[in-house]
Image (cartoon, rainbow, N blue to C red):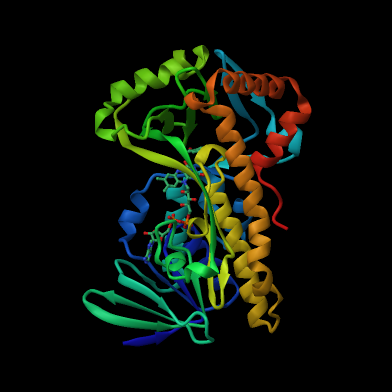
Length: 391
Ligand code: FAD
Ligand code: PHB
């Protein structure tokens, strides 16, 4: 059974669904093919902070009503070390703010919008395979409910995450990959308890990193740095809260409310970039092309900016100009590398690196001290945290 579309989008994560919504807005036909069920995709607890650039793109796609009603705008962010907390005033330093709104909610809004406008999504597609993208008539094959299908397209958008099939289908000699793996992970816990503060707290302690984040005024997301050898089953909720509380600055620790976990998981930390992001008629966007450690809250935001650029490039193509698709990779990578740098730097600054030795620990402390005393240094952090402009 064969069908045809203009853009075949592989993956129904935030990058695939937002690309679909932006293309729909531009009148470009598209089909999303996802290997998991919609419930499975919605069950993955991931990012929580949106930059203005991502909010603007969701608005452009017509999917920002609930985001504006329920999202929490944050004007500042806190760093803590030595039991002291230091606020970085994002809004005063940059004129911008960030929006706390979970990736799950972004995904749900995009799924609802897609269903409402009637663009097709195939969930639980097996054996998804991309073909012919080095020529002018690429196609995708997959198996749906035991039936083999073929989708012909003008272009394929690989929005299928780090472990997806698209990047893996590119000949090895056509792609260069850059990677750094960090020697620890983040153990995260989601619970219906009030946040410990009205803004996020990123903490550096001699026991390791911690982050106090939130999804709403009644739901919190907490993280602690943990060894990669830890298993989530080894961490009871109480053990998590005990360790998290030890790493919080004292005023916030006193406000911690404990409640049963709704979700608990360990995520490894990785920096990764593939170059280029275009192979003939196949484009990579979001985690399919790059990964950042979550410290800078950039993963979801980069996924959004990639597809913002890609949707414009494809719209230009259909208006008769190839310039956009020819420069997509270069333009996206320029922004990606800056977010990679910030996420890497912020990860180095805030985590415990036992192998760095006493000199490394002193350097880290000196940098934290400098940062909280220098407005210039805070401005550089703020500018990157709220997100660099989409050029
Ligand atoms: P994904 O969300 O990974 O979506 C890709 C989709 O493609 C998935 O639905 C997948 O099922 C589908 N897919 C995969 N292979 C195939 C195939 N062969 N065929 C069809 N479909 C396929 N970022 C932050 O900023 N803060 C965080 O706290 C944070 N935590 C994270 C925790 C984890 C465990 C992970 C993995 C990521 C985290 N991120 C975080 C990063 C952020 O969630 C991602 O950057 C974001 O999800 C990227 O969106 P995406 O749509 O590109 O990829
Ligand atoms: C989250 O709320 O899950 C979150 C927030 C900020 C980060 C990472 C994760 O840097």
